[in-house]
Image 1 (cartoon, helix red, strand yellow):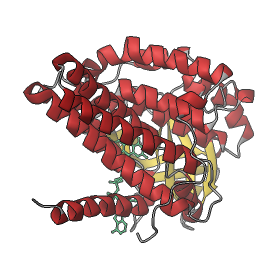
Image 2 (image 1 turned 30 degrees about the horizontal axis):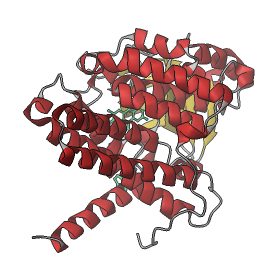
Image 3 (image 1 turned 180 degrees about the horizontal axis):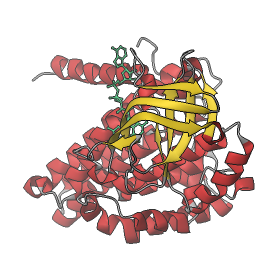
Image 4 (image 1 turned 45 degrees about the vertical axis):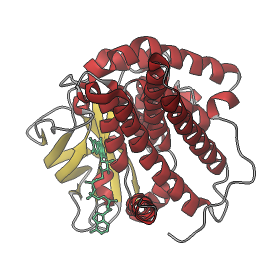
Length: 384
Ligand SMILES: Cc1cc2nc3c(=O)[nH]c(=O)nc-3n(C[C@H](O)[C@H](O)[C@H](O)COP(=O)(O)OP(=O)(O)OC[C@H]3O[C@@H](n4cnc5c(N)ncnc54)[C@H](O)[C@@H]3O)c2cc1C
């Protein structure tokens, strides 16, 4: 990547500071839930084989199941800055709860785009209320080569065949949006119950270093027949690539949540030990997080800028590296105990690893690796 990074003309204030009225009140409630209920249980939740549905009910009680759903369908229709602020709060508190919730928001987004109005009317209010939680299976569409999940039209049904390699929420979520490749290369999205059958076969939950309780499976379809009325829409690989591009900055809220929680550990440790050197480290970490958050907010506000995409990629790569680095700093600051599975520092570090590959596109992968290579070159050049 050759584009030199430039600071945006106007730097937005930190997201949480910018929110007012009903959104500030919502953020306050989300912060209370995160701090009082989710965070104290987070290390234990991380070790559970499956996220308890109760955690999602807590989010639904604040309206978060429908955070992004249009008001006409019973949602909060929150603007992007509110979504980012709520996501950061929750990601700082409990990774696996936030991760499963994010799959549901992705599903809400897909159902909102459905061309089938009666399906939209049936599903969205229930999804927004948290009466129906939903997962997604579409990242395989980004893989080059033969389609992982194929769809063939047969009369008034569509027949799915193949395996979606990553599907989060088995045994937690009610439905799943499946995306497969049609014979003409277009992608078809349909919603089905996320329940095993002879035609829908989940693997055993994948053993993951992070978000193990997300109950992520590979999902095999064997001649799974989906009626046309359960289909949401068709789209093209080019349209998906354009949406991926537009969504480049969205996952930064997750990485910022991890970094913020890590920074708090370092700061608390500095205070507890009365260690001025550690306090300086905490300050440097907080400064970097603030600068990255502000740059993301500023660039998020100018999607029409010609320089938007290269800057968004740089920022995404920065946010990925930043989360790993800040969590690593928390591990170093907390010492040997940080390696205990009960310790928050190592959990944050593992969550940062997952966020490194989440919604990874070829461009994001290239940017992530370019950032790491640049850091390797800097270290080499500055070798003592
Ligand atoms: C714990 C976990 C849970 C997940 N849950 C879900 C879920 O619920 N739903 C969902 O849809 N996804 C889910 N994902 C997928 C996730 O969002 C990313 O898409 C995924 O981690 C990227 O890795 P991959 O194995 O799919 O892709 P890879 O095959 O590793 O490819 C990564 C990227 O590189 C590109 N690429 C790969 N090979 C080549 C090549 N030869 N040439 C050029 N480019 C190439 C791909 O296009 C892709 O963009 C989950 C992932 C994890 C780790």
